[in-house]
Length: 310
Image (cartoon, rainbow, N blue to C red; front, side, top):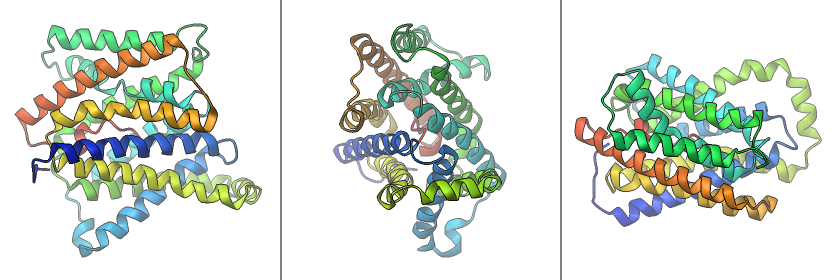
């Protein structure tokens, strides 16, 4: 997507709004996971996105739904579904802020995969950022932190899976409209989860009946906040270059800290703060370098450089 107007202040504001939306969505996932099956929440998140984007695209008629690369859309949807699955299940076992920080390792993972899989040259500074990001992760999940254990595998696998997704799809993403792509992301995710949901439809229906109506309404918030967050990112890239905006995506960690405290009264310990700061710094610089390089090599692709896994 080309930059239509140089308004970096507005772009940064939209990125901050995106971070707030994703922090709220993640907190709702953790909160509602104590009341409803996680698989149902995962399905609802994608179904709501598909429905919201369908209404958005309907203004253009059938042209809004046209895709030249349906195989790419389904592949992308499947990869993001796995990524979201790691997120939804992992959030039930870890604090929101620490999980968010570990999930933000994606840019350093992309750098590592670019060197190992695509055999692209990687500077010493980039390798230093990779090492720094993983040092930050070790600090967060260190023994005795309350985060250390098998549950930490969820955000780490999520970052790895999403890094693979970015490497595999970066060349094709710029060929499709980001709005159309986000519709198919929701649509394919909902379609792929539906058979699993139907296998236990009776149990899920009984669980939903036992939940207070007010909490069922909150399920809509998971999909709506995630969808609005992605739209904010798309609009942001319409007003400022990627390299300007990418570092601000890491404010999502700060929003996650704030919302998590309001809902769960969770405060990370001192070392966790240090680890999250290291991850944010290394990830933000890596994201900025990746975005700058991508912009120099080919037209900017919102979908390909989106570090938001929600």
